[in-house]
Structure formats: structure tokens, C-alpha cells
Amino acid sequence: QVQLVESGGGSVQAGGSLRLSCQASGYTYRRYCMGWFRQAQGKEREAVAAIDSDVSTSYADSVKGRFTISENNAKNTLYLQMNSLKSEDTAIYYCAAQSRDWSREFWRWEAVYKYWGQGTPVTVSS
Image 1 (cartoon, rainbow, N blue to C red):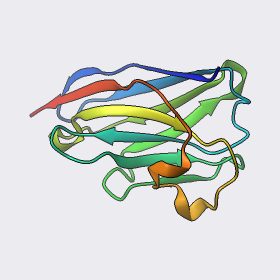
Image 2 (cartoon, rainbow, N blue to C red; image 1 turned 180 degrees about the vertical axis):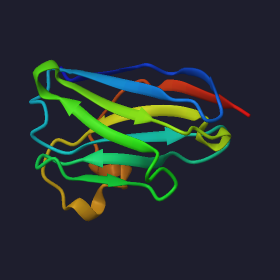
Image 3 (tube, one colour; image 1 turned 120 degrees about the vertical axis):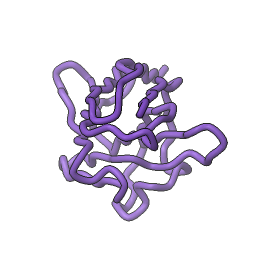
Image 4 (tube, one colour; image 1 turned 90 degrees about the vertical axis):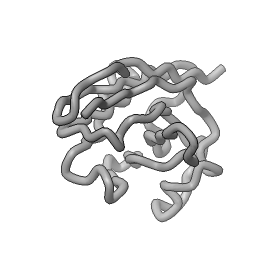
């Protein structure tokens, strides 16, 4: 059974940093694309970043230059380093994993991610 467990969320002031972690189990780690999504209150869930099996990365325009997606294969863990946080980054952040190869152009599509974590909340106060 595949499980994705996020951690590292919390409250921080604007301009601060947080690092989210996603521990994967029961999954052939990093054979396929993994990503981070977020959902702010009253808004639809949106893609934040993704990393492909060839370690290429993709980012939403709103987080480029501030967020970095990375991984530790030995620990089966995906990370999201978030710097220069803004109040608009406040959301619940979800880790997600694909179960087959999809074209990189689909990285923003929720439907191509089969496995999801329970989410970890991030609150940025101004």
C-alpha cells in the first residue's frame, strides 16, 4: 500500500522559510514524477512544483525563484524548500505521486497523480 506522509508545515512570518517533507512508503520511489500541490481556503488546488524521474523540475510562476523541489532517494523523501514566503502562500500543501509515465506537460494536472498525502498546513502572516 502506497503512503505519502507530509510534514514540516507550520506558521511563519512573511519573508521567512519552511521546508516541507514527504515520506513515501510502499512505492517504487522516484520511478515516476512526484509533485507538490497546495489549496488555499476557498480556492481550487493548484500545482506548485514537480520533479521528474530524470530530476528535471517544474514550478508554478508564482513560486519560481523562491521554492525548490528536491529529493533524497536513499530516504524515499521528497522536499519543498520555501523561501521568501508571502501571505498568499498560505495553504494546505499536498505531496502527490504518479504511477506511470506522463508527458512532462501534464505536471500541473491533478488527474495524472494517483497517490496523495493528507496535507500539511502552512500559514504565512504579514
